[in-house]
Image (cartoon, rainbow, N blue to C red; front, side, top):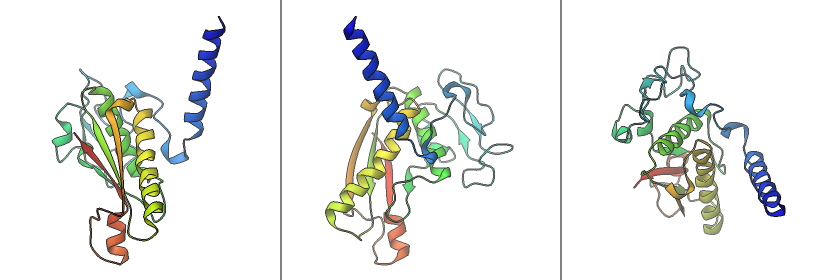
Length: 191
């Protein structure tokens, strides 16, 4: 009986740690099976949802408005699907996701949850400012913040790997804000 109590206590402690790590911008959906907030046609059918983000939804007026939502296996290849967004940009010295990026990552998490054979590599990047060690750590925090949200949406830890590149693979060459903002990113690479 003591083993069951210890296991239960460990589970409760683990869940408390995971929940306490949530920032206001990275809270999970409260209804995994109820479809995306603001999505039309949000009924699940064999693991797939098809609809659009827009009218009456929380994302009206956002960069995501008008994009389709589908969790079919091939949805990640549809340029009109929200899952086609595979680069998440960050503010200087930050690993916090914007509201639109939270929504994008939530959809990727739901896709992974519904497609157990899919796997993703999260590649963290920074701009050139800061030491190499600091940038590797910041890039890792960026990828970890995305991983945490993917897991909250039902993705399995075994579906997700992380590589922290820091400043090693810039998306844009240059030494100004225009280049730096393109380099402060995490890329979601389906394998």
